[in-house]
Amino acid sequence: MYLRIIQFVKGAFRKIPPAPSVVREFGQSYRSNSSSYHAFVEMDKITALRYERLPEDSPYVKPFRMYYTQNGEEKSWDLLKVHDSVAIIIYNSTTQNLLLVKQFRPAVYHGVISSAEGTNPTTIDLEKYPPQLGITVELCAGIVDKSKPLVEIAREEVLEEVGYNVPVDRIETVLTYRSGVGATGAQQTLYYCEVTNADKVNSGGGVDGEIIDVVELNLNDARNLLTQGSVVTSPPSCLLGILWFLTNKAPKP
View (cartoon, rainbow, N blue to C red):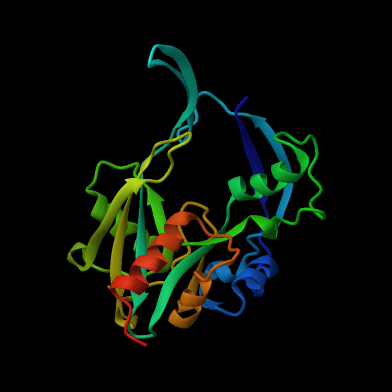
């Protein structure tokens, strides 16, 4: 049974520090963009959380089962059809920081709970599992849900999420790969974009009800993030992007 998490977010309009769980894992390696409107909204203010069956008309996830015969043996595999996506490595050459985004991810939060309580817990103890556990630090990214060139979608995401307005000719294609191979097989295209303070036109933070905080990561801490044994709340695409940047674009120390 495929489920969806229903969440209700209530924002308190006051400045708050970064989520404790993120600070603990990243150390003091980033600073949030406190000028953002969203820095005054508590993204971890999650209440009335519950699970429901995934409706068939979901515009984001389509579950199905594939049957096939391999080497004479009939097999099946449960799959999810999801949107392809873009992700952007953003480097501010004025501040010499990487620009990342921080947000609450229900799937990550569910992963933490299900690892401890089972796939479909009937109740969720928000004190035992504070919503900060679902806050991630990621590359600027977005799904491909428009009939536009991928690089144009990437440009829009840079503007909407981090607030920098750059032309598409300043956005470089890095890699195209499968962001998932077990259940989704979706394709993600990774881009690189160098910005300056002069390109900043707004505070970012997302659109359509998104609560996103812009994060600045200095290069020394970016290197430390990739040391053996690190534990981070970031997806592989973020770590790949940081590694690619450090290998190919970062100023020499």
